[in-house]
Image 1 (spheres, rainbow, N blue to C red):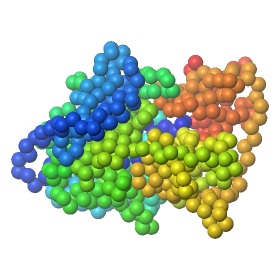
Image 2 (cartoon, one colour; image 1 turned 90 degrees about the horizontal axis):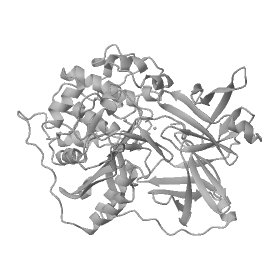
Image 3 (tube, rainbow, N blue to C red; image 1 turned 180 degrees about the vertical axis):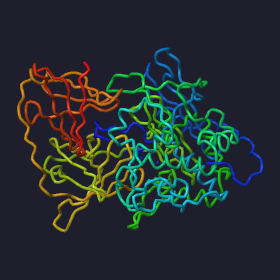
Image 4 (cartoon, rainbow, N blue to C red; image 1 turned 60 degrees about the vertical axis):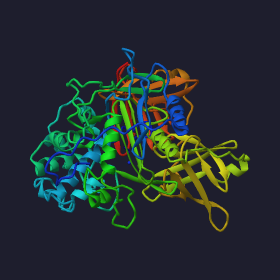
Length: 570
């Protein structure tokens, strides 16, 4: 389940990001099975792609499978790392992985199939199929669900869901989990990634077709297209060539946390192989999935009520690179990360499936870099231009995007860093003319000045334009850091369980107190009192709680208006 998080403490277990169909419904008989793309002759591009993937996986660790297709021919296909770390089984390209939110493009395809058959329309209100759903006086359409613009609360962001990962839930019980939550905004006014919307789409598919979601996609998509290794994933079933999933916490790799696969459903419960995903793309390209008008609509970004571009279609993120439209999507689910990229103008498709969460570089970055190489526009960092501390200081400040995301630019000597309100701190390097870049990525930041010469705005490009950020000069609430004895800090060391399988580890390193949540980066916290600590990367606080004897028994994470207790388990 791509893309949306406590900045290193937030929990987004499935993007089912980032950031990113059926066979012809009119066909009287199943279409012939799609053949695997023929291999292309070895090329310089293939060698460059090979070096990219080889350098991304460490020996003895879980890894990835990848495929890159160009104009119907397989340019590259390989796998690196281990499918099972405990048994030392090497990964192969035909291993099956959970694909998380890449599932959404299959769900949207099922909706478009049913639309072409006249069984629904994307403009239909959802109450036509779910008459008892409480829309709170709003008209919510199927299109709002497809485009993440419904305003419904996404259940994967709800604190109560965190303790339910192991429970098998019926579709009705899953919907009951979120249906009475307050609306976040009026339908069509904003874009916010939403797994609940795709759960409802699964329910609508079942109502309109008379089949279970898993049966519909199997019978109408996977079997006719010859996608033999793609299916709704159930943990208890034996699946040939199933890759085991792993979570990474810093340098430590452990078995993935358990999640009942009844819960991702139409938002993220599918599994597949890179070969099957290449067949899927070939079927899309050949027009065997849906009619051209339906496909074009699926790849058209939804326009919000205010006229702005959401950069998201029906289960696909719409981006741009080197003047070309890019259609892509990611999927993250416990132990796995998937990413697919289409650049139709060049006939390029790249899919990367990883069996470890929080891998660096990510499956998304690798897929994008591989696709860029395949179109002859590989990523390359520009030469960095040196700055003096005085020059660097002029860029320092807080910048805010229209959706309200904060971006902080800070300085250490003559080095500059940028940090999203809910992201990691990255060093940025001057390329010239007030344009900065993050090494090894597509991220570019162009600072703009006002008439007085002060920097007041940042235009952001990261594989396509992102929301610009405007300088925020309002005073920030003061947070005073106090000195706490190292011996006191050491009493807080240990592991604290925020939810089953989701643990925050507290350590003291060189006089600094650090926290690290399962599958996420290590973050320093700062004392405002002997028991109260705050984060600088995001607006959050942590309180350590003692019992009558003075022993630390739990911590409480305060964020987003919620108080989340975590019992100390060791």
